Image 1 (cartoon, rainbow, N blue to C red):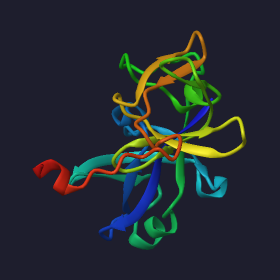
Image 2: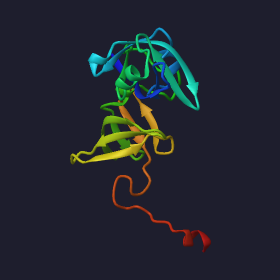
Image 3: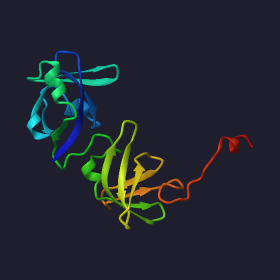
Image 4: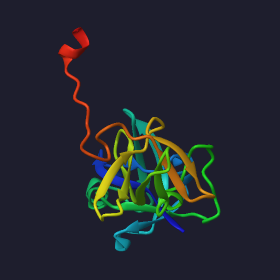
Length: 181
């Protein structure tokens, strides 16, 4: 099974290094020197990681055969894809691969049907579960502990405790004046 583990950003310096947007909880395993990664678009790879380092909080990678800024810049926005055994599970107890979450049924804590997970959107500060509602509409649910209270892979469902307004139009508006009263 193939998993997207990173997206190449801009070139860094003149010797072929690139910034990467990490999309895996295991970068030390998936993006280690010697790792051979497929790419999307496919004609950009495969790429072999030659070296990696962290600079100002960003991961920088250098690939074999990419030796200058122009070659590095040509890789911008390329997705890096690792081959993973479908039976392999993440190391952490509350960690999941995207393929484990796709197609899970989503229900509220009281058992009300919300929909089915169709996609995981990886944003800089948090991930979002893209859920298709029974009526065909989509809703984005932040993948945080306070809202997604349980994942049961055996039962193939995710349990959510949505705040008012997340799934409907019953949002609660709180103003600063309310806090002073």
